[in-house]
Image 1 (tube, rainbow, N blue to C red):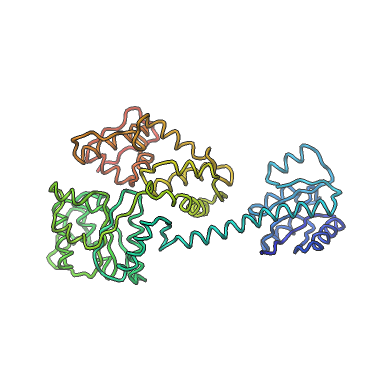
Image 2: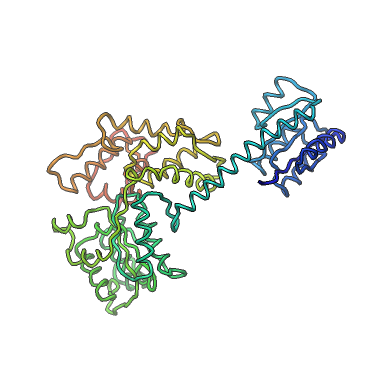
Length: 472
């Protein structure tokens, strides 16, 4: 068990030496400081579990100021204010500013011992809980993907087997399920090392731009092409190229991609010199490519070239046992990134999150957690911090099948369905592009592209702060 350290901060030598002696008799490692400044110097060097701080320490920093500065350096330290001048106002001020306890001089050795025992018992339990969580996370973590789901572990095993090969892989799954993370895991298991991993979003760009993005272009190939540009396939030479949303590419690009897969050669846009590359192709799609082939929207020969090894990533609603793992992992990560002291979620909040279907899958869950952490005032997320999820569900209306509250009509094409889902979601968010993209589980750039493609009008009554759709 960790040996916790304690700091006594008091300008009275008798008081600090007496308290230090009492606590050392109990077996604790104790240091003492005669002023706030000295205490802060010690705290910068040593991680104290408990700091006893005298309220009145003239001249210089008083106890409240010392506590505030101390907590900036060691936010996890328990601060106990001690004073001979007890009033209701000072007690309220101390507790409001972050003191864990407030005790009055003269205090007995027994009172101090019991207080320390109680605080350290909680800290030991928190530490054991953290260790267990980290062990659990490591047990269920594979190449940055966290899951205890049986289907996901079968995917992990398949990744281990196919990683060292150079075979083309097709990853299928809904938006936000983590298809790119699976692709990166395959790359890493294939002795990726310093070899490049290059990702291309096939849904984010128009055909002409995507062609230049993938294959590069020569100087003068089109207006604005002032110099030769290497494409993503060249940049990925020797490594892996990840083609996300492969089902969205045009017939011409399908033909060009088929040639690259067959011959590992291509021409830059406007070029006459063949470029040869050695690159592994991993493609991903949320579209049923077999259905797209039957409907004539996707080349069957390209589909068979891509469909060498297939992985189907299950949606989050089919692996809800992963939600507690993902939530705690993301809370820890996001808290560090956002500079917020959020350390946990309540059981009630976890139950609320597990009751949702998450149409945007893991990406939607991450966005919800980020929103909750940004707006949180405490260190533990409760149901109240996720009240926006209930409001969005209510806005969807009764009988809603997803976040937009929309039920698909019969005898509709895939394009009709997609357009109507986007329209319904934009109505539900009042035209807020960011919220709509989170609910739909797609990037804002992808949503902009689809709004332009389907000529979806701006939502009437949308507020000024909602983003306008950029012109193409």
